[in-house]
Image 1 (cartoon, rainbow over the protein chains, first blue to last red):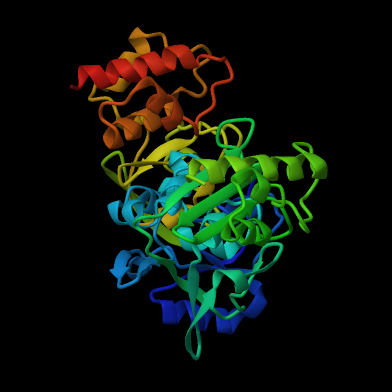
Image 2: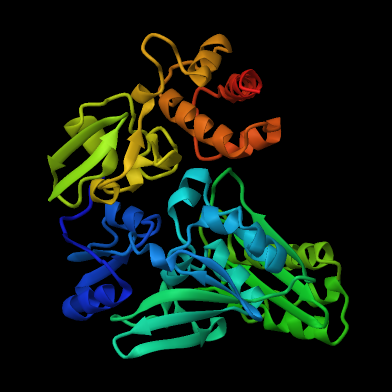
Length: 274
Length: 153
């Protein structure tokens, strides 16, 4: 399988990438680690006329302690997130979810920012960032803005990142005392989650993000509210699928996915100590 | 466009279309056919090589992304007639049947031991999650990786 021919541009800075996006408009796609985009291009589900390679922007690969938050550069590879002591100690859920992405080869190439900017509801990392209450820094021609994860995923494979913008940083509130669980249900090694649940409990605060339970990555708000008002894990998890419209495919129908969401959320809450 | 890289210690440089996949570049331009193409969709791991010492699936990288990088393929592991310890362990444990997955398995296994030098059996199985063997030969593959880990201790 070979992609449709395209023009290749190697970005030398974030500003250069943004200028190239402004020049080529919706004909251009950003290439980071390539583990979402290249498969789509090989299947010819995507055929960008211009590929802007941001993979050499090493200054966007970092994990920093930034006061109350962890600041993670968008081009930080999964492998580096997974093995970071700082991430493990301050956002253990992100470390655990990242270790479940694809397989070791995928994690050597794929990036945190790439996985989030792809906006795939079946991806593990959006659910983790939702549960952790993260935010994204998006850079455009007129500067940077910060967008809460709750406003970031706008539709199927759609995010708040505009055509001439670049996701540059992911910010995760530090939670050294949090307990957490990442529940990924699949049938075979390295498969996507049929359903997944990312759970974080930090004192009174509880975050639950779900994988593959709607057209975009979603927060299980009813579960969080129930936990906040003192419900048991089992009672809270009963509302995990409320209002959601999960896909139906050869792995699972809608009813089964809803069932999985409730079971995995309960298990997650219990593993996180609720 | 022109790409240059090091493959198994040798400098190579060719003019390629940007859409050229790295595995095609390695096989057809560099002439190294030890790296196999299996599923062609980043699932099976037959095309696993090392980029800067780390296992990657060369079917899911463009040749232009490897420009300036240091690559190792299965041909680069042995020292002359002396097999790499991982190759020797695969040989001794009979860790293959048809052999199609073997180059990718060996490259993934070498990368695994670089990161986890003394793995448990469970860690070996998880570490080879990205490589499929359709002869159902995992038992001996896992045994080979554990043997190679032991021999380097």
